[in-house]
Image (cartoon, rainbow, N blue to C red):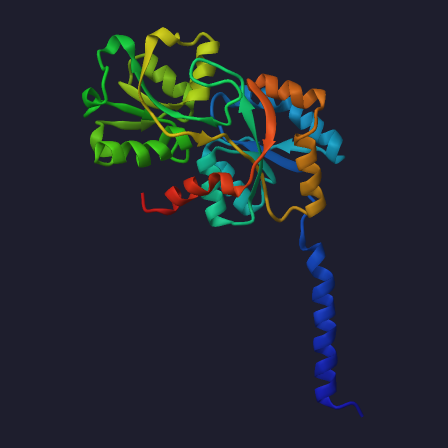
Length: 294
């Protein structure tokens, strides 16, 4: 008769083999692939700008790409963490927040920019800018103490996170203590709009998004003045969930870095020049800021 000890060994070996076979298949290969983006400006306009990219991805990946419309930065973060979003365009801070909570989330491409009023040709970085209306008489940081301020979103890199870290360090007190009322507009273009209308005295916005608002004619460059500028910030990354199967991840990377007409059209829509590979190392300093108590 077979001893109980031998039976246990056989069962253990069988289980080990089963686990070994299951491990490579633990990755996910979703169809459709669920894409989302943070609402930096008008979400409908953003989705229209990205449409050529999504069409190219569908053809390159051989599957439908569905859009998950997000109402806030945190919606995209939580979607990636919960597995309801597979691929996303994020800000550096929102990516870093997600990465700190799930190390498998991966940044893989970003872009270089076309020149503008506040962005240099081919720039791999952008800046957080503190702006006021030129006709307001608020022409120095000192004059803004106690004044009303517009931020973008709590998870916005240039519209909240960097100002809270860098600007607060410069003035020596937390942002909310330096200014009077601090409100969140929800997007960069809305921050510019509430400033233009005089609802707030100042706003922190991204240099590239300020350029876009100027291009659209919603405000003139001569109407605003920049009172503070952050250190360079790496551009927004595209990220995917780490649980996606490696071959799918590779296909996504290759699709973004291709020279297809759809990719070129999407970049033109975004006033960008080309996609460039990135990794978590590019956002490491920002992750360190976010890991500190705020």
